[in-house]
Length: 194
Image (cartoon, rainbow, N blue to C red; front, side, top):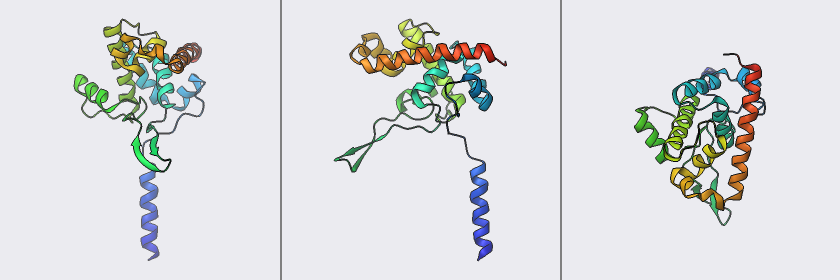
């Protein structure tokens, strides 16, 4: 019987070693430290910058605002009467917090049918793709983190209508995204290793 438990313990241990890393980097306020800790994140963002033209700092600031770099992030569950679960607030998930419908559109347009919202390469590519759509549809510059985030959050049509103007909290978040993008850009210029 003890061999059985040892075999199960060993199987659990081995499966834990092969899993994806979904936790956030330790210091989200230091792009250089993040780059040292998670070089794959920055390799993915550099590839997206080359493909879509969205600066690494802008991608990082958007992902920070959406998921704090938690790969399997999901929206909270809603409850009725405080105890009856009604489901999640939305279908958003992963690093990019992409909604199901938008993610499906991305996969179809990019022919990346195996894309996974919990994969940093796919998530950064999504941010680049969506930002590029924001440039095409709304004329937003690819280095304009504030307005890219407003379009990212409210959608292209919502951004065009100015729906964010009725959401002071969202404007504050977008301002923080712009500040974080500028901070990340300064930091990356001082420690750039690529």
